[in-house]
Amino acid sequence: MATVNPVVDETPGAADPIDPESAEWIGALAGGGPQREAALARLHEMLLRIAQRECRRRSPRLRIAGPELEDLAYQAAADALVAITRKLGQFRGESRFTTWAYKFVILEVSDKVGRHFWQNPAVPLDAEDWDRLPDRFGFEPAREAEWRDLLAALRRAVDTELSPRQRQVFVAIVVNAVPLDALVIELSSNRNAIYKTMFDARRKLRAALAAKGYMGHDTAGRS
Amino acid sequence: MNGWSELDRFLLTDPRDVGCAQAVEILHVYAELVAAGESAEERYPGVAAHLQACGPCGEDFDGLLHTLRDEPG
Image 1 (tube, rainbow over the protein chains, first blue to last red):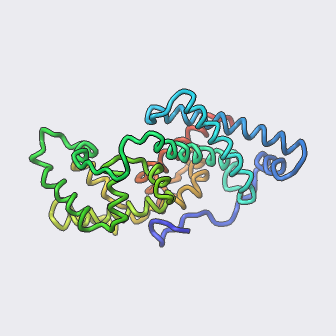
Image 2 (cartoon, each protein chain N blue to C red):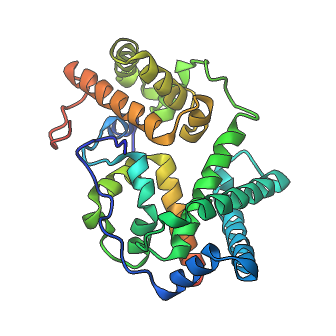
Image 3 (cartoon, rainbow over the protein chains, first blue to last red):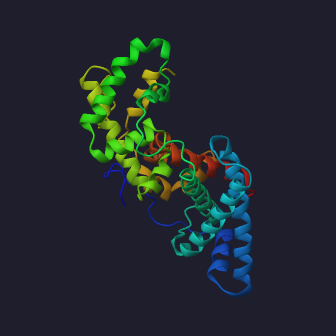
């Protein structure tokens, strides 16, 4: 499995015994006939309720509302149901079955929100409005004399230290404020790969700024 | 928080960070521990580091935790 740091592995070891309620879910969904149909209907009802609630929770930060947001919740619930039934054999009893299932619908909501971004993007992917950068980090215009050199150094480091891919991802996420999940869709990538690219970019930029005396070197053992 | 500290925090990387794939793989386990008041951060420090640094995974974790608290048993 790809991780940011290949020496770190926190995946659980052996599977735990499955609790009775989870075993009942698994038995019903893995079986057949009316029992399976009833379990699927119950699961879909649950997933839809959670998707709707999760969409409402996120809505203040989204540019989606009303019927569009409701559609998104329905799509997320339907796709989560497909994913859960397809991956049923991967459930290892490390949590309750329902918690494992909730995760799928939450992830589907994120995926749908990311896809929706490109229906009406605030900025094109190739835009580069560096004037937005001070605001991204909360630098006050009135104190520009204090941060102008720092952000100029940051921009130089972005141009000179980063690989083309790292620069593309940094500009999209940090300068253009494209949500990471939306960038994943646009670049036909995955969240882990984009995060890793940004992780490496952040590390390089911090080292470059530290070398120029703009920031202290990280002394917490971080590489 | 001013711009300097915000930028400093943003650029800081934690070598314990397990990345999105591993964090998502055990997000349900981590969320149940947190919901039960157990020390998920101690058991999975790399996941905790990741959820602090990764906005999308942090959002998913918040959503899962809210769901666990809202849904009956």
